[in-house]
Length: 283
Length: 243
Image 1 (cartoon, rainbow over the protein chains, first blue to last red):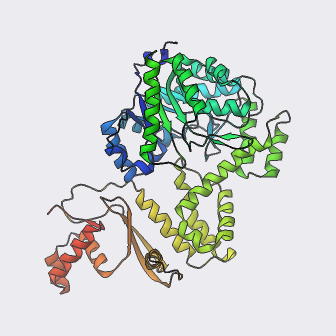
Image 2 (cartoon, rainbow over the protein chains, first blue to last red):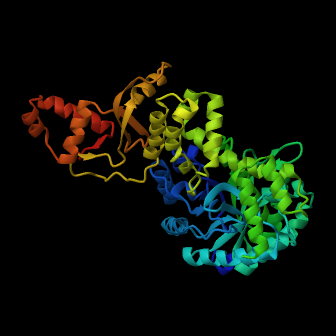
């Protein structure tokens, strides 16, 4: 088992299992009697929207740690970082007193236009050189530990010279940030690109993993899409246990963003993750 | 940024601005060594375009139903080409849609009430998501800070209300002052035409007039004024101090 160097260095302890604060849960989640250890929010849903989203956020923040997980930081894009966004994000992180925050290693804006998607970058040293100072700038401005998530991708981008694992390692090590390991993304990428998911995990800087995402996906004849629209499949649960055996307990999120079922069903998935965490701790 | 990376972003930017077969071919031409299956790369074009469509369709369901599927699809396709996503919050793509619809009425043969309906639907969302916080508690009668007033040449409020009751005729032409606000407790959008009692109560809130003063000035029974204040306070159009 590897030491969780990044987490320890920043005084971060495993938080248990969380679920996302989605619109359909705004009224119900703050009142739940079920076990829940923390809540994830997508900051874009709270930075400029008032009313119900703010009331739900305040109610959740009174009960649980809240972790912002962004989709619009555009850490890999060619545009300068969005001043308003980063300023708002820093204020939100402070407001909920998040122990850390995260976004994806991707780009999401071109020429001032938000693409509202997580687009893959070429696995090159040029991208590493481009991303690293941007990560450092974000960390300096927000003032909390920052994690980058390994995104799913359906096509290798042109000009790649690094393996995916080396690309991730180079970015997080040179930027000195944490890694949010999306286990479903590892599975989806491994299936879509024909590599061994466990070997990929073994090649990652696991000492930087501070959080894990688990989600469902949708299988089509020629591609698997990371839809976050289903239960976590058995193979992903198995890969999750494989990761935990190497990292020890890690804060884990059940992500469910499409075809969202009842909150109880999502919390049932969270219970399964909590059991796996306990099982891993008992080894 | 290295030139090779700038080239990558420029080529992806051209493709994603107008995803399609031709732009995909140009993208591959820009990277002759690229062997990724085009069916995989085009997923991103479909996603990026789809996010705009999904957001606009969620924000303007009544307009969508009013213009029909074929016209709607063409409208959204052309609106997407204007690159409306300039804000990190995806729903903001709808902000420019009413103006786009207003420009398109004659050229596309849209119903004349389409711009008014688009403004109404955008305002419905904007009020729902308003960042204006209700002062709590208020010391005197106060207009709801999320209130939006729309001056419209069609009776959109009556049409939306009738539609909810199963009536499907088109909105009637006629001046309307539509009031939209977020209920301070339920946090959902309320709307109504600006009736004389609603305007009177708003005037009382804005100018700090009491019921006896209004009764004296207008000759209205004070009880009727107090009833209107109580009813519109319950609806949240105005915020009343604690009893």
